[in-house]
Length: 88
Image (tube, rainbow, N blue to C red; front, top):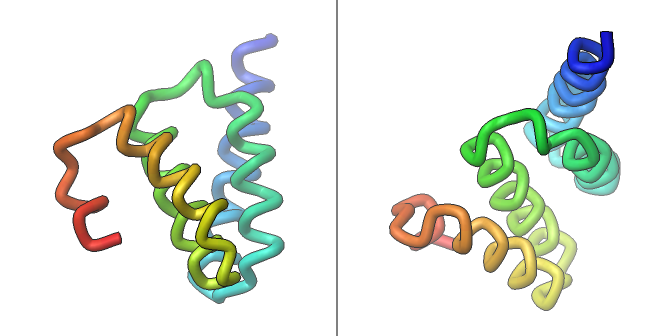
């Protein structure tokens, strides 16, 4: 059904993105995080927050500080009091 296929799409891309992120393969990680965001509407704000935070971290590593700020701001809008963003 539609929901289970969207869930599989999300989890497949999130898994790949997290794996690439840990390996610091930033371009591949960013591509899969962005794919996961296409189906994020069926998942929690915590998942969305984590993806935005990680994309912010990736853009910092790529020295794209404007891009990093954009994703950190998106994460901040979801959880403005998060301690995880205070270190970024």
